[in-house]
Image 1: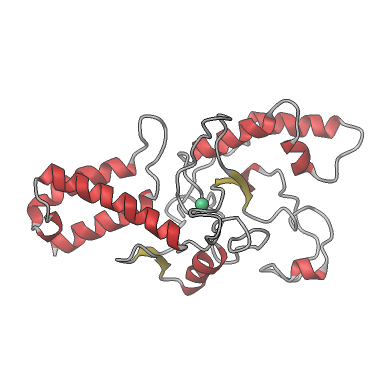
Image 2: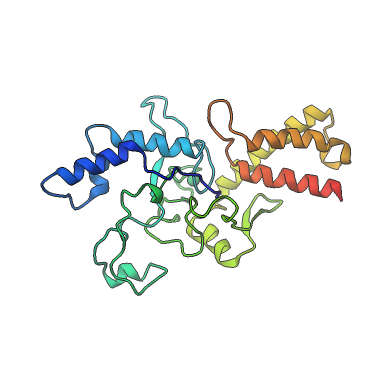
Length: 266
Ligand SMILES: [Zn+2]
């Protein structure tokens, strides 16, 4: 997970959709379903906007959101950070409220088509059909559960969005904050084994690149002289590529490269 910078104003396409909705004689029960089915293609355009502002990586696992070559659509889901089944402006049943952090309020805000509650996430499976799901996809991922400790990734600015995340030598994600750690693992399932394998795969590619740049197979055992090469590669991972995309799993790579530099500087 990482901080996601969103615009202050909602996208025009969403604003227009809401204006049309308010003009209609009956407001539909499910405003999100209406958005999905809107004949003007508002939903597809919104998907593109959400993916683009995230550099085309999943808001949770940071895996790449790729285009489907046949349909030319981005393979992604629109995630409601606060679940749309509960934050719907209506009175909730006590069983729904029991899934929430604040169990006192029965009526919740309506965040079903609220731009700041919407994020682009992956389709939730990194392996074959028998593998566990992750991110927003049930049964192992978040679905309609509320995250109580991880804040909305677009709130508070990049400096305040500090999940105290670390990556282990085995490429597992963890947080120094035990409540956040539990949500990363148990609600989002971000250490699902295929996800971990994909992080390793990306790391191996960057390690090979540094070996090539330094001319040393065993660059990890070298001294301070290789720091400039690591820094050059680090800069690349921190930036958007020319096509407007971030490298997938960038935060894991950045964390590990910065850790290497710290170790070499000791
Ligand atoms: Zn994901």
